[in-house]
Image (cartoon, rainbow over all chains, first blue to last red; front, side, top):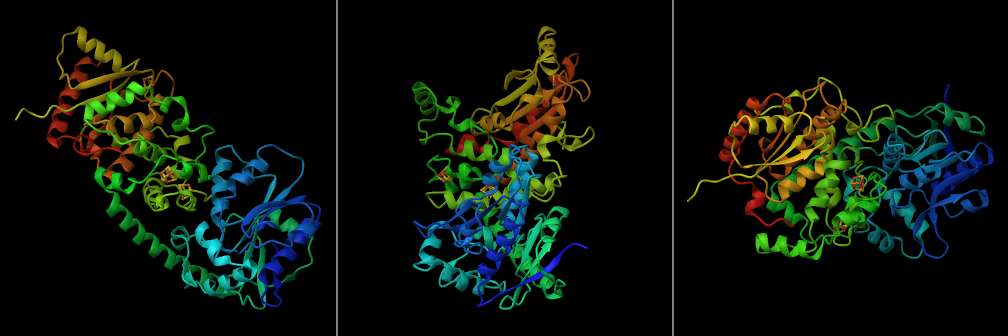
Length: 381
Length: 140
Ligand code: SF4
Ligand code: SF4
Ligand code: FES
């Protein structure tokens, strides 16, 4: 029997209950370090921290509606090479999905890390979070989560959830070793903790927990949230297609792009070590620009904007997990996530692939079969 | 008004389709001059990026052609190419590019006659589609 247990919540402080669990996990001595988000002492921003001393878990705030980076890349960095010790990471479901993509791309290793995920209530865009958090961010988190946890609110005190979160149909991670459940729980009293893998079970068995059964209300709550999110997502797909379905429209979609490439830096699954767009191949000779301009009479500078985005779509859309970090990183508020998810939905469907779903499903462009896709060969149709 | 003459960029693998194009030339088989051939070692090295670049630069059509399945000189480059063409045929139409503007064929080294035929058909198909939108509007 794998462990399913409940953890008591006192004074409505869920963060404290999670802190206590992480402390216990760190004290098992199976785990030497935990990657978890917390408030930095110097500023109220929430950032991933790597904690080895249980006393340094005080500032953790895994439910804070802040999502400054997709920590899959950080978890990848921590697992790429064996370190002889085991670590745990508290990640959002979309971070775990991105991590799984990175494992398949040989940029991360699954074996040395215990993935812990808390049911995700969503998050704000970076700028919005700082406004919302104010002077007492931990208290702000409690206000936030109480409002959104019933699954219906997408706005708290006038601040809206990031579009990526509103459209996310994966609020609960299937691939975490240990899942911390909030949906469908009476979170004033207790939250759920359950092992989803042998490795997770092994750890939870070392800890003193009171066993429980997963309440039926939990699956109902999750399902209804997924339905709601999916319909928002489908509407987003339609709207995005409507505004991008010709060269003219996609050009106007990206008209304010300044080729800063922040979107690919922020993207957890943009996997190239060196992006071709920052190599000398795109450091064109001066005469080249003039000759391009002469050919058409006018070119937009910097050049290669659409070229960049379309190339990125072909290279990574099959791995896009819809985390929204690209939109978060854009200095010009271009809704990139909307476009990337829309296209990703099409390409992932074409290859019968779901990014981040399982380690076994091979990335579409890393494999081929002899007798497939005959319909794209030839000149008749 | 003069008739629209499309520009078609063709990526031919060195070992099969390019050899066929050579053969067509030496056998004095005629095919339209609209096709700009780029010789590559294998269709498996055609990054989707090259095709996107061609379209954004105003190509009205792109043809990728290589060895028949099983004949690729690098064992499986053409299978990989087929997946990438599949991918592009999903993505490009999302931005209004007709999927018929992108073609993949297998033309063996001795298939000069078929090559000339395919080129003629392709040119007339693209003529029917008219100029690509990248010729008509500004590409950023
Ligand atoms: S493209 Fe955007 S939404 Fe998709 S994985 Fe990358 S950062 Fe996340
Ligand atoms: S972050 Fe925004 S401005 Fe920068 S390259 Fe991406 S889309 Fe363009
Ligand atoms: S060598 Fe011709 S397709 Fe690979």
